[in-house]
Image (cartoon, rainbow, N blue to C red; front, side, top):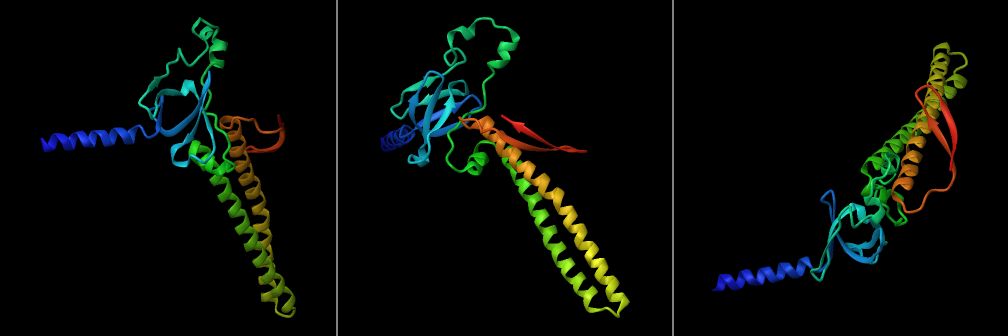
Length: 228
């Protein structure tokens, strides 16, 4: 009898814990602990349960499998009830491709890198790679400055010593090479970072980025394009 009462108490406790929050389950089996604030025709809006004072996120119904509300109500979404009725009729292949579900749209929390790390690890890794490339460029600049400093010093201070003057010239050459090598490091690193941010804005934020100039780096050339 005691065991039965204990089991019942545990069941009630777990049930209360489960329904203390809304649970969103996506088609790829991802579970989101949330507080659903609004359900629209094509999407829902919610806040993360762990940060109810934080930003409001938007998720397409086509990406949702089930919502378990805190009061125990369960709402199931299918391809049929997450799309307009006319979409169930046969449509041309070109239109079918246009109806492919888009990536999850979110509202910016004000920290694009934090959003990128959460929603798109691949683009965040690309941004980090660009940042490391830029850091390599700065290391080369620092090395070139130190090498040139000592090279010029050796060359000027030892006018009668041929060996020291040659050493100074060699150090100046090394410093100049470091400066020259740092330039493509800055270009490539900056291009990777801006490309990651631009693609994340386009794919995940609910608003599109403004028109801008874009630096494209190819294996054998560099180009500038205007994106709008």
